[in-house]
Length: 214
Length: 167
Image (cartoon, rainbow over all chains, first blue to last red; front, top):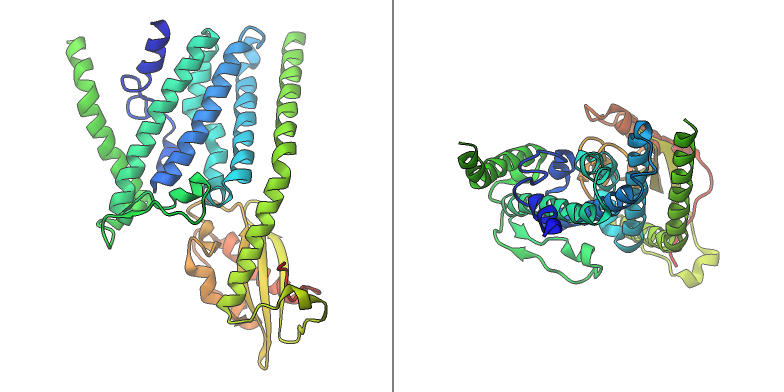
């Protein structure tokens, strides 16, 4: 049951994006379509799960005063591996979001989990903590991608074929012939949509917390 | 102190083993993807200019009198910008069209040079040397847009090139 708490607490109650407000840079930059959001969520999950597990495994061998360089080394190794894999197996998608995958290294949500959780807890709980955080981050970025794609492009699942490896198949669903609010697909629109979603998430999930505090 | 050095050393060693293994297994696939991508881009560039693509079987004696393709690269704002340049020899001089193959410019600011994201570079298609020299630079990305200008100049100044790179 202990692992269950590790897994679930980061999904809603301590969601890295909605509640802790971490990792907003890639979140805003890459959430213009669901395909991009899914690719970033997958790459982040890969890096987060492997780095958290490895850091937790090595936690007694890493001296305290060099722990940050060590964490960054581990995180950047897994990020480079993710980039290479993406470049080999989803090249079209890689061309679109390569730079954002590379800056997963500086995603503070990942470093924060390494520093405040994996370096102090057992391998099992660190693994489930990373899985939970990944699910929380994916939920946030996919929600943002969904809203931005519908409003900004008027489509759903555009370019998803690039992610699934079949260049000819098309999963695009056209909801509107012309985008309802094309601002949503641009960077300022990312801030506006993210702000509204944050407010919505706060209204839904923080209510319970406030009652407990009172 | 010694403990710190040894632990960082072994961690770095482990990381490099992991990276080189991944590189070993993905390297050939990545090279293949890149050349495929480049060929696609070249094919598109030629059809955009209504140039008939010569068949690979006749590649030994191609007539390169009115156009040529060159690969040029230059440092941009961050890292090398690689491009394909199509040079067409016309009566009034040599006209250049550019397509960027690879770059590391700032996303959202400098990536307008990629024709798949922004039609900006297509607006300068088939322009002469003096027209490239008076290209409108994009504010906020001066170095990037100047690099594109220099790519055009460099493509005219360099020698060699191919009639076609296609298989």
